Image 1 (tube, rainbow over the protein chains, first blue to last red):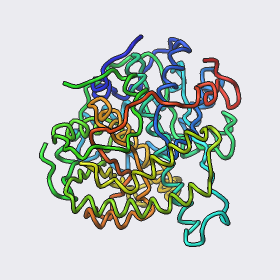
Image 2 (cartoon, chains in turn yellow, cyan):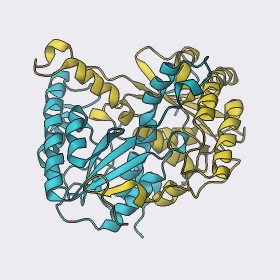
Image 3 (cartoon, rainbow over the protein chains, first blue to last red):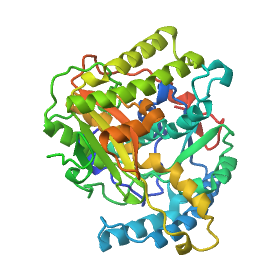
Image 4 (cartoon, rainbow over the protein chains, first blue to last red):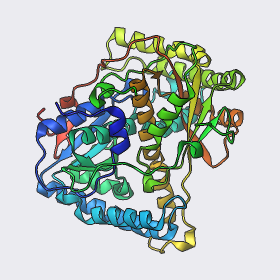
Length: 227
Length: 227
């Protein structure tokens, strides 16, 4: 059974955008999805769904949606410019890597659509009057990501452990209706990520990240965490 | 160096709510935060911040906010009732475990507040006119969770590997302003999770989850994934 140590996986699970078109055995995808379903979710509701797209016609439809959303992303990135913490070389690689995927996602043997069914609110008259129903609905909206992106991170790490490449993408959300139509996703289900999965044509980690001392505080904002 | 295999970590990283008050060495918290910062984030922006609350007075303030948000949660859960996929016994344990933490979070040696600085939009006049600025702002709102909850999952798994217990909580978001005031968090930074961390007084995994065949589809919604 293929496996690696946790910290090795976490520290080398680079976003992999260049993938071989070679097939990935179904049982590996199942292991990745098992890992996804071990994640926590609000109220342990486990409202996640995963559409494993391998059929070439379906992949082409998904790729067209991703391309459309990515074209908008390209223009926003260009207007935003290079983030301060990235070097010119890092930023160039970042743009080239992302841009490459925009045109080639259909070449991945698998594109995984990660979905979450909206958690139901109790009926308004079932809640005590001192609870603001609309505030509570807003809270429910805000915490949806907490019930699906932990599963997405498990997918990224499980792929890494199995030697598979993948990357978390969200550009399709700019035209999500098109994706839901292509995949037949019901109205009360929302998509959260498109993840191409396949054998990597790039190397895994290590990763370059901001050091902990720049992002951690002790007891209150602004008080240095001594690492 | 303490470490376990990835799939073992993923399959046993149970939510741990009962924690010993014994101190956790700073270097373990730093390792956990290093793991968090390896996660992906939109545009690799790494806008995460972590406030490590250990001071008893600060913890008491955080605990009061969590208690206040949890009291609302309690009433919503009661109105919603038992989810279909949980047995009566599981649901009772779920309520008892959650409820216990509502009153005892301050006993954890560490409460970690996980934050994300809102990513800046380019100025409206920098974007081409064919891009709908408000739609793009909405997209940015929707994808914030994709830039912080993967880091949260790395925290959950790193704690598991180091033998530390923790749990992802969000109840405080119902009264987030109180938390931001207590911790001095700036206006343009949002909190996403409160995570008590300490040595567990409960056992790790295995976890009970819906089987993959109930949540995975092949190529389109409704078409069974054969696992």
